[in-house]
Length: 173
Image (cartoon, rainbow, N blue to C red; front, side, top):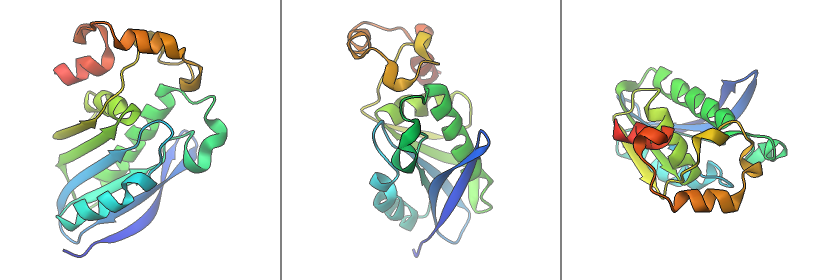
């Protein structure tokens, strides 16, 4: 199936973040691809074309603080990046060829962590996580780069119940 792609600008918080929308010509499922920390949409462009060739509309994008927006890296929070993901999701499902009841989300590492939170806020039929990260809820508004790496690593070695963590709770529901 032939595909086409176009550059999109996702409005979020009075600004726009860059994305690439890859689509076939019929009403099809949507697929949102979310990169990890220090990643970019570039790592998913080829995969998006492959998935679109199978009959889906794919959206890749750069989270705030990444790619061309690295100047904000030291200040960006998980809340900021979740807002980016919500805006990207909303743009994807607003595409006239997307079947909004059939949306897949693929997230890697930090993107996988945030994808789980997205699934509690928007309709996600399929969720694929590649080595999802895990963070304490208490530090939600702390800039990601300011998190204490040793504390994060120690937290990941503890038993965390879904009721005690937003991301795990989203997976449990």
